[in-house]
Image (cartoon, rainbow, N blue to C red):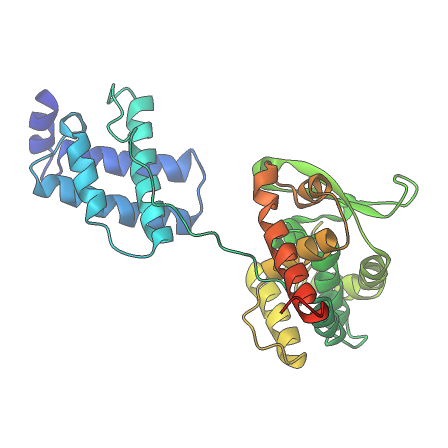
Length: 314
């Protein structure tokens, strides 16, 4: 093919190498994927391209379904890792189709391995209370830390949504029947979520007594609600450190992440009798099937209570 000749004239890169490089640039410049995502895709596809070339396949048009299947059968690692690698390959082929490099999708019948159902890890109500009570003090950082943790548990927000929250996203009481915030989730989809009295009290204390002290001395203007000690927007890493520090003071030994409070929010609200469709809306899930995993947690909790309380359950 003429493309092979061009490739030979431009160095040792094959045609499939060039399209691999084009795809990585496409993810970076046009899709705006994160560095971590691009790095993972690059590793996955680097191994895929190397495998194809070891079989003498150096142009996209020569890739067969058996080439793809053979590579996938040789993949090792956890099911989630293999699933990601399969997804990387399928997305690469979809890109080649969109670019009219290929006319047939040889990965169409390729399915990632089935992933085991993973139940969210949720804290008990008592553990959440211990976590929140572990953040005390009137110093600006302490008021911020308490407000952040109260906010995450009260709203079920993703940490990215909490850190992206601006002062304009906090809705006044006269706008809604109860204090609420506007959260921007995946795909820039917005939703209104109410804020309970404890979280609103902590948030008010932070906004009036803490945030101005953190921002003003540094002279940095930011619309972010949660700011760091230097006045800029609070980073994800610092949010993790805030949670970890509170967990240590509360003597909580299990591994926690900001998402743990989101899981706890959903589990506790469902256990309290909320309709699953309401919880779906609060969490910002596009499909109720994503929310249904929390019902399993609630059923397990009910089963434990039943077995411990009913005289003829054991």
